[in-house]
Amino acid sequence: MKLGMLTGVWFIAQQAGIVESLRRAAALGFHYVDLHGVFHAGPAHLPAPARRAVKAELAALALEPRNYVLHARHNLAGATPAELEEDYAYLCAGVDLAVEWGIRQLMLNAGQWAYGARREESWARAVRFFQRVCDYAAPRGVYIAQESEPYVWFLVNDVASTLRMLGDVDRPNFTTLVDLGHLALERQDEAGLAQLADTIIHAHFSDHQPFRHTNQIIGSGFTRTADYLAALRRLDIDRRMRRFGYDELVIAFELGVPGDMIADPDDWVRQSLAHVRQIAQEMSV
Image 1 (cartoon, one colour):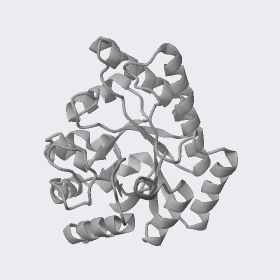
Image 2: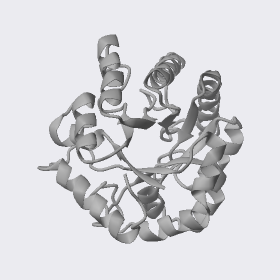
Image 3: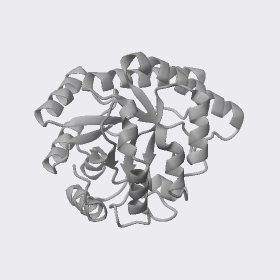
């Protein structure tokens, strides 16, 4: 397993663009990066010259972009047909951008239950949407990785609903991004990882208050990060990654939420790195 960095913390702290965020990650020693398409690296943020600049910067800094975080622009469960078509076009543009940057996986979630909408239809709508995006991504060599969100108003919010969505979408390039802090908020123990083991393509470190999604410094919250890492080792997760064409799992730090006042985001990263290195000395950037 290797450590990676999601670029969003510098946007949250200082409104940094994607190129500046990549430079900050490289300066801290990272090789693997996740690009945050929701905050500053989405198709809507970057005209063609800026997209080429990102590709050039990745090469200049010798960074390997492993994962692309991008969501639909509307809530799938409550979107109109026209909005769903807009969302589909946006995600397809994201897949194309991932290919341009050399990224083989795109992360998204299924959205939130919409008040007044039938739950069965909301679920079926998300399934159909995922299937369309997967079918677009597959011939381009891109995996779609769903992430569960740890609150009841999200369609996919725990291991059980993750497995149900995987089964209903039923596409070979539909996979799982597991967030260790989300598992803690969902009150999932290490056995949940075993249920997902063959579908996990990527992971995030996050830490939180017991009842709030806070993305605070790793080690300062209640997430049992050491236990989850031990469970991943027992599952021989690096070997399982070969089915996706990778040598090992990358776990990227996800720090900060919009509205946070972060005076020194680099220090947040350093403290998080120090904690993980203390509990898992074999892990490196």
